[in-house]
Length: 508
Image (cartoon, rainbow, N blue to C red; front, side):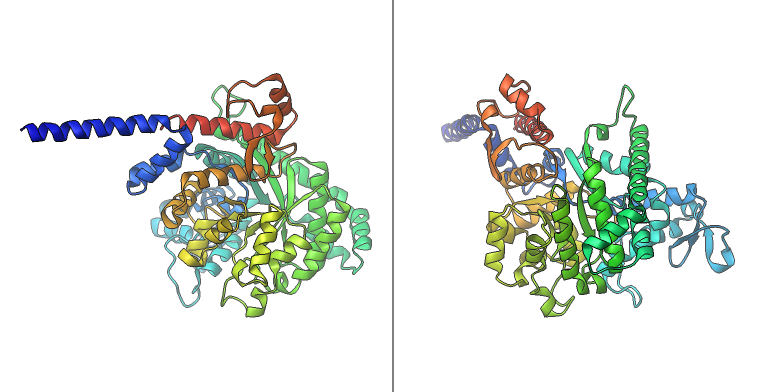
């Protein structure tokens, strides 16, 4: 009995000692300690990751981020027909004998509805003779729901910003085609010229101003529709109303070169006059014929346009290739390096083939020294590309000191959300809390926002001198710090994120 009392006393004393020790830790250290204790507790881990501040999503395709269920609703609203077998959309009249039924049938016909959702995403993907590869299935989805996308930007933006905000994101850059294809049409009509300067002049004189005006109206309409749906002007606005939203002008790189150049020019012109458009990016699968064949030409186009519009940011999908997908020569062709050195990319999306490029150590060192951030779509890389464990490049970049931010890519087609990417980072790659926090901070540090950074140097999270004496994330600031924040949208968002981290860490 006395022995039992001694055991109880020892346990109580030990627990008290641990509690005192925990109280002596900083809030950030206690939070890190909690995450380690929650690794083998699925409920606690998911709760933790749902609530952690996530900064911004920098690699996000609008059309790929809207769930198939929403696209079905849009097709019904637009009165479109649905091909029962191919799950493609077409204008009326429908013809049941030909397998084309009203899209509304997918609301009540459960097998049809499931077929459409599976066709418009990678949900339940099972290889078939005419649909053998999950990656090809992934890229084929866009053409199937494309007929409804341009008419529903308001609803689409409302969906994605709401989802981002409730996951504790505060910033989103989404890729779309603001002119809805008009620049490509103009390039097709005017044709190609090897002299980039002459081609630019011809496009500017041939109707580019009207393309830009139309693009701005499209963005106006989309944003106003989003604000109305979210009730941003009401007494109870949706959480999405507080999220900062910006756009990247995407360029379809698998198109003919005259159309690619025209799209690029439209992006640079638009970003020069509309602060909502913060960057130009090239999209579509990199193993498409023109994307590979014209890659060096595309980089020279960007080099020229960067010289004309040096203030416009560039983020590029690069190294989006895997072994066996293309010839080995394409893997060592230094797509990542050339995107940075010739294409002036400030951020790299995916960067999957970094291990196969020429002089890997030198490339990683260059990226770290130049602070080229990698937009790592971790979960998508695993389920679409099969890159798990040692095949995944996330640990490679982190070990090399290259800044990384987790991003969703096409969260709806992958049937995911950003929280799940954080979950995979913890469970699959054993990332700790300081690393998650650094990636969230880096997402804002490398966001294409105007103004000075809150941090003294990239990846060095020490506050600049006007705010160096402030308590991290304090609600009120000194006059000097307040003036600094007022002059920089970037710093204000970073301060907001630090406030969120302080509140989050105070719970542990």
